[in-house]
Image 1: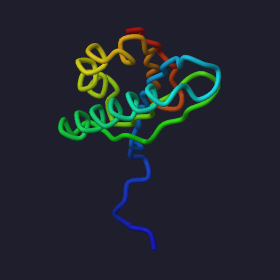
Image 2: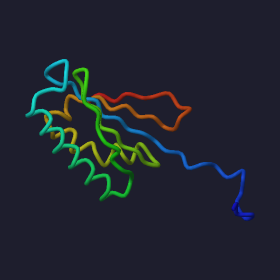
Image 3: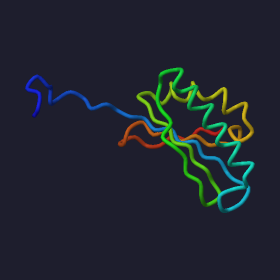
Image 4: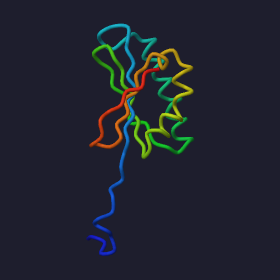
Length: 113
């Protein structure tokens, strides 16, 4: 049942995506030490994002010599601000490329650390 009070012209919630791409030491899934380090970084980033109340961690993808961490929130700038100190301190984060997608119609923006 639909809500007769709902405004059909109201803007939809705009979700911003932030992808953190890290190169691995081989063309496959990387080595165990890298995967452990990335898992620790992902946990720290997730905690920072949740503590700041700016988004959520959507998981990771390993393959082809890279790992991508997926985050989403209403404001990509706030997401990035919450994560930047951790990325700059972490060895895997310092060499990462962050891709920001501000909604489905916007062109992606890359930020190199």
